[in-house]
Structures are given as C-alpha cells and as structure tokens.
Image (cartoon, rainbow, N blue to C red; front, side, top):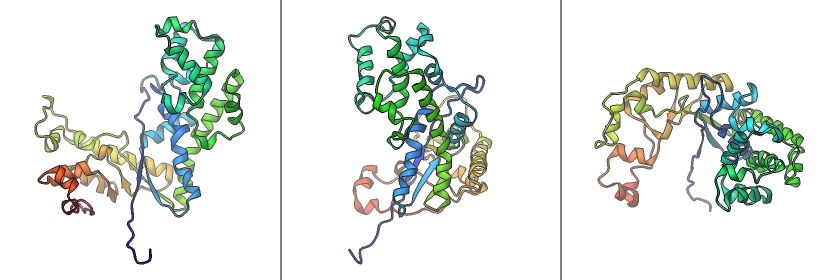
Length: 329
C-alpha cells in the first residue's frame, strides 16, 4: 500500500564444497563438486534471468571454484567418474561392489524413487537383505550400465534436461548404451564449464554481488589461536598443545582475494567467514586485503553481546531490537 515502509532483505547464498583433491595422487576422493555442479550451482544464478528486478549476493568459496575449473579444464578424476566411464562388460568384481555401495548416494524420496528404473535397481539391492557381494550376482551387465547412467543423470538440474543430448536419455529410461553414457558425461562436463561464466555474466550486469570465503574455508578464530575457543565456550577442554597460526589467516584471506581477482577481473568487496566465525583479532586481516564487509549470524552475535538470557532475547521484541542493526568494527 502507498506510504508503507519497505523492508529490504539481503540474501547471501553460500556455495561451498570441501577440497576433495588428494595433493599426492591428484585424484578427487569424492564426487560432490562434479555432481552438485550439474545440479545446483548454475541454476541458482540463472533463475535471476527471469527476475531482472531482484538483486542477490552469492558467496563462492575459492576452493570450490578451483575444483570446478579442475574438472572442466584439467580433466579431474574421481573414483565414481572412473567407474562410470568404464565399460560395463569390463567391470571387475571389486568395481561392481564399489558401484553398488556408492552409486545410490542420493536422496531416495526425491532422486531415486521418482525414476522407475533407478528405483528398481535400488530395490534389487536392498531387498531381501543380503551381503553386497552375493547381491552383485543378481545384477546383469545391463543393470550395471543403467546404474552408471542413472547415478549421474539424476543429478542433472531440470534446467538442462531439455537439451538435445539429455532429453532422449530421460525419455529412454533404461536399456542405455555405452554411447548414451559417453554423451551424458560429455554434457556433464559442458555444464561444469558454464558455471563460472554465468556468474561473471550476471555480476557484470549488476544483478548480483559475489562475495568469497577464505580460500580453504577454515574457521578463522581457531586458525588464529585455538585458545579463542574459550571466549565462546569457557567450559571446553582443549588439546594440550596450543594451535596458533595468524600467518595462515593472512594467507587464506589474501589468496582468496587474489584468486577471485584472477577470475572476475576485480577484487571482492565482501567475505563470509566460514561458519560465521569471527573475533576481534582477525578483523585487521580483512581490512588489510581490502574486504569492506563481512557477515556472521545470530548465534555468534548472541555470544558476542552476552544478553541476560539468550531465550529472552530471541522471544522479546524489545530485546530483539538490539540485534537488528548494522555494526561498524
């Protein structure tokens, strides 16, 4: 209604995956960057194409960006990708056991049961209960091939399912060929290739701000000095050996700013400290590297303000008002 005050709400969408790469072998220990890359990261920002009046902030952790680049530029590998790529007729018993153990790592209600063939394969494994090695004998070569395809196909975001390479696979549903699988993996890599350029595109038109986190997503107060834990939890028992590395705090923030600038062509203004972890001692490091704003959360603020009763502050409108304001540090 005319004359009503407007409430401006800022959303920060936090995009993160741990660093899964084994520095000695170069292999990725888990497939989540690759799989979530085809499911979540592109469509979140692409949705804004249909809502030009909405502004959002996306927090992209540098180690996630590095891993996305690694998959589409350097040909990164993870064990599930190798098992998917391997021809079904060439699978060893160990391969089959690993596939049965790890290729159903998806939410059953939303990512397995809605797809009849994937659900059928899942039920074959789960009932009646037997050990996996005995169950593996019930799976045909075609079963394993279909499982290789579906375990990747369900992670494809609906935004992409109409693409000419993917739509036939969803329509086919079962009886996939090795050529189908190759086409799927090729399309998967293409989606990963498109993620970072999409964020650059939407940022360039001024619809989003991109903030970052320290490079490998460390909890900065603990990295600075483990003894700071006692400020939030005085009763906690800490290891006998103190851990204090302020120089690593400086590197994590500095390298994050540098890496972001290499990709986007300018330094970031904001940073989300991992888990919202902040303390007075780390603030100069943000300033040193040009970070103009950081964000934390309500629980951290409660600990900082130390109100009379946390529950009272959460429920009393008068005391809650202490929280709804900006803080300059």
